[in-house]
Image 1 (cartoon, rainbow, N blue to C red):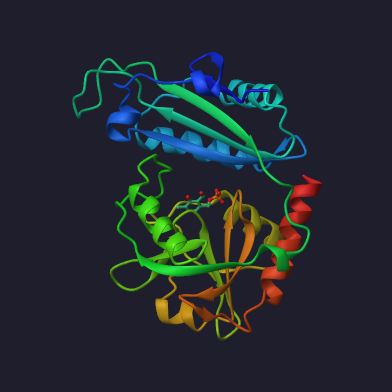
Image 2 (image 1 turned 180 degrees about the vertical axis):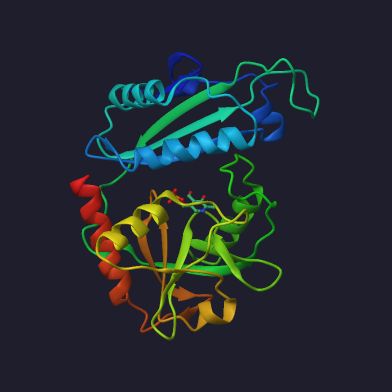
Length: 284
Ligand SMILES: Cc1ncc(COP(=O)(O)O)c(C=O)c1O
């Protein structure tokens, strides 16, 4: 069965699916995207992801090509046509087709909407089977990382550096030597003093939906995390480091730049949050 993609109102075999070379997403990276995990046929944290999508659209002055309810229905249809129960959905909205010229065209072209999906293994049962290594890399991205923009060249280069070093993720740091986030994930630590910390939200990081879901799950247990800056020195001295994202869930980093973190195995906090998140995935 060929994979099916949704492209501007049509469901097409992935191999035949294409957009115009003058699409501004292709020419300028003038677009935004979302990635959602699907677990047993259910979109995980769909409300959070669709709200962030709406915000990204607003921030780049792009009108949604359809309502959130219609989008939800199209995602469901893409999953149905691809017979996906567990996997990921990729959704991209770009400014559409116009003669190449930098300013946002007026009148606005029709935005391009592409949705693809692919099967993924079920989430891991045990955190021990879900560990990762990370490296640190300078954050060379733009000043609006809160927008989930398709401009991902610095992320691509940082993840490539990680892969070449045999690691999963590149943890990015700014010019002041403070951690921003992973190239495609949110960074959390348990500090040497035992505090659970993740970086505060501002324009320099993406407001992770998994981050928000975990903070909500923590609050329901009467627990909190500190939301503040984390220096590279604090990161290296951390008892635990873990990453969160829609597709990495809660992923412990057991080695950073080749050095063991804690005792080189998933820590107690990462394990507890992993369980909490898996419960949320299952319980929905
Ligand atoms: C740069 C960046 N930060 C954080 C995240 C985590 O976001 P979410 O939990 O919504 O997947 C992602 C996800 O891909 C990302 O690309």
